[in-house]
Image 1 (tube, rainbow, N blue to C red):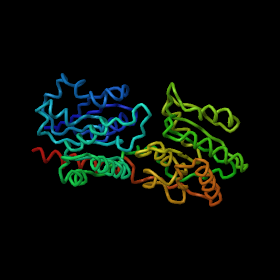
Image 2 (image 1 turned 90 degrees about the vertical axis):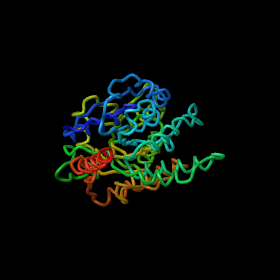
Image 3 (image 1 turned 180 degrees about the vertical axis):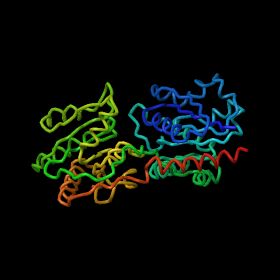
Image 4 (image 1 turned 45 degrees about the horizontal axis):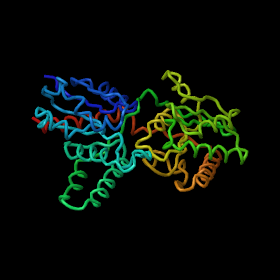
Length: 364
């Protein structure tokens, strides 16, 4: 009989949706059932998803495995549905609230962190999309518990470390090119392909472009990514100041158009202050782009050292100078792109299947 997996996405943002759809496609030998909630009303979603799913018939059924994303309140869900109490559960951490940037309105709220912590304690396995995500979660939990006044049992951190592992979101094999392509060293086409939000460092991108202009370094640039009604003012300044350098501006609705842009760009760059894996960087690298990234976050796991510039979070001007220096050195070295082959879907699918089989065997 085909084994049954219930897949839960409590805040189905684009990267979460992409991962769950890809997982179902990569592993067609199981019977999959998905519950997903729209990515809006964050505070309600992360705290209220067990209520939203309270009357879902499939939660009363028998499953061989439950896979939940990091926004799911897994502990409460298992408590409300006794049929899930003995079902093996895998928690997939796209991000963690202990390292997630918060706005002034959110500062001081502990509920999202507690949801992550309770869910990790309720899961049989906790899987992170990068080592940086895992390590920042464990460090954040430890620091958080150390601040509590009393009644913190021994062994919490050991339990969490024991059940934690790293398994990235895969990059589709179709995106990988067969042969490296040359970089236009005379006037490189730069690509900045991230969400148009403050934590992705648009002010640092502005500072870098100003540095390149000050040094008379020729460049073209495409600035793409998902935008929102409210966006940092830095984007408007970039559009005004560098209109003569812009190849493409704004979100690309059609995936095929975006893939073509990846194939035309020379260097994919990031200025982010927060990125738990960096799918945009990995996709562009697979498509043949040379990366340029700060020496922080998950970028250390796949961006070669010669493509990382010094991270200076406290001084964006100094960091922009470091990034411009690194770019100048790269262009002087006849660089060759290195595709992130360990992140290929065909290489990661067997690891996902092995983990799933291991967890389901515990429930038998």
